[in-house]
Length: 257
Image (cartoon, rainbow, N blue to C red; front, top):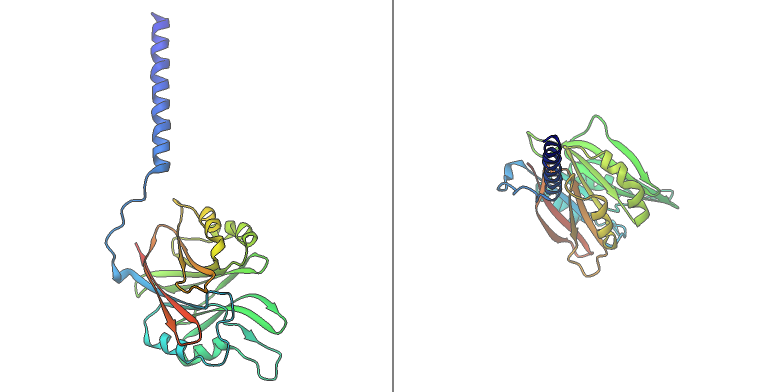
């Protein structure tokens, strides 16, 4: 009788363990819950200006098309990728300072490297000053900038920006970026199209949400990626040519859930 009871208990225990294993596997493979309807009152607009070729954004001092679009549209953040500054010459050139002054924005600079007299930077424009900003080196030639701002009047947002040029930068920088990804963070970065799969593997669901956006230009070899926790979702993105010099602007609509 005792032996039969032990067999029965063992069988019950085995069934319980099997059921637990199935539940665990199911949790890992659960699809993401269906998203609610788009609430535009909880949505921020981020503009990303670039040539999508990793070339300097401005090839001359004609900033008017970019300034006009910034002033005529609503955005919480505008990123000017490769808005490089040139120093040491008799007439130093700093496009971000000029654009910010005319557009009525506060400029922040994400420096990636200095080559000769050229500082390769991404410029970030927002509509207010901040108490502090942080810049963290994530790998050689790549830094992460983050600063506090707002998605709208009632929703706080930490905007972050980073630029990758090669796979080794992603490999060494991914862990630092994951550690700095809070529920308030909206990270907008740029990388070669060839790194799309690498980005997807490093920033995989279910812990974060990654969206990659490629330019419609046939000459474009870079993509923009948006990385957040599940507290945010990209609802829409549109690309618009700005002027006639090859500059494009991505308008990214991202909602706080």
